[in-house]
Image (cartoon, rainbow, N blue to C red; front, side):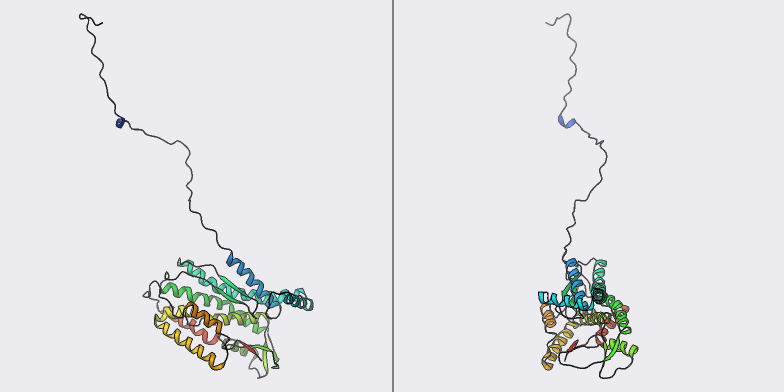
Length: 334
């Protein structure tokens, strides 16, 4: 009980603390961890590699059997085995590699010209897609690269389009000339069923430089190296047709703009008229593909980007190669 004579001391002051008055600081004393990116790059498709290997095999078999078309059926495998027994494994491999190696080098350099320029300008594009075709004397129908449209501007489109043919010709022309140097001239008899190959102007000039003028009954005997150069020149010239999505169509559009579409339609009409007039329909598949993918060239991301004089000169000179590299009748059957 409190005593009146001895009062209690005053009470201690009371401090009221509210939750908002607290400040908490948390420190992390653990060792720092490296930062990793969580984005995972999707795996690349193996289709381009598979097609490349199949094209190497198809061109090898066609070259080793002296450019005879090959159908993958048991009878054809037996024919290839008989050829090996006649010439031996060494000759078989030398002939196959002598044709497939140079031809694949030409095609690969052509497509890598397109692909590397696309990578340079950050234009989405697939890796080269080779087309094996052992049913033809060439063993292949070339290769393509698929790009997303509407991204490249005028100058980028020009660089991507023109680099492929020029890169391919860097190898095609020396290979063809080397093949001419190692070729022989023989008197040929135009027997029914025999096959000959048309000679473009550039190849005629090479033959004339090495062997001189030939008589009417003389021909240069194709060796694997010369035939690889011939195929490389022909495919390059064919791609320079100034129509639609071919390299020539891209180049002509960057040079002329929308006027190039009129040129493409006129050339397509002339090609169809020529086939019906002569009765030669060897290019029917090509024309159908051109119509399917479009004769007219779509606009670029910016058609007003200037090319500059050097690019304009290079573009017209590249298109002019079509005149000296193309032959209307590549395969002649007597």
